[in-house]
Image 1 (cartoon, one colour):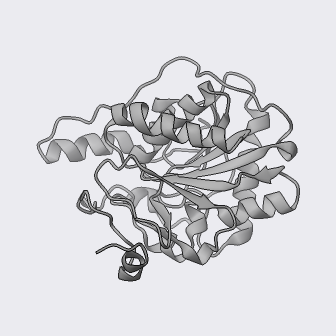
Image 2 (cartoon, helix red, strand yellow; image 1 turned 90 degrees about the vertical axis):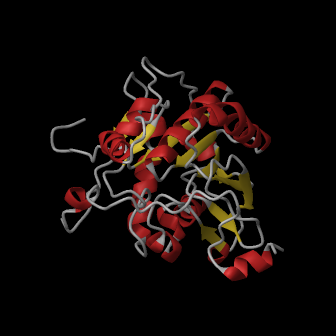
Length: 289
């Protein structure tokens, strides 16, 4: 971590929040030592790249995620109309993600990189999950093996994981470590430094942006493209012991977001175990009662 970058520290804040509510501290996963790293089998411009999002993304017509340790996944065709993508999650502000899904699920930047030949091709399907899973044991036992099998079935050479919330980062880091051990090169695009450092996946591109903007700002396609292109370079640049590449983009203008990021109260939505749709139309399209 360079001197000029002072990321928001989410772990102590969450400990303080739990203590104020009378709960024991949440036990974050701490993985010491270098993680196993599977090198790309060929140059990136020849690789099949999969996109995995943890922000609760689903396609219209699919059953939405619920908010209580949902360990299911959604499979979305890569040709999906981006206007048919929805997002539901209990732990981050969904307003801008619903305005431009690319900030948490960078479909358009990846399509552009595929068209330019910077990546060989996108995998046939995108994969999504609800990363806000407090049970790390369930992630390891259920979600990580299941998602890794989907990546293997897609014959993905590489996978770009895009977590959103602090717990999403832990979930995605665990999945990335499992996928890497099964022959898939992974990269996590992170905006929560202390959690991703703690879970310690094989490769990370860290963007010092507010939570909920993992892949850029809304309605800024060129910025989003530059961020994803620079992040993917970590497959080539992270060859030594370091596991985190610091992206050079800075949140502008300086509106003091770091000073206010942790000052809001508990804004989490109820952790219900029924599907939480973005809108009633989605519920009807999914055939839900």
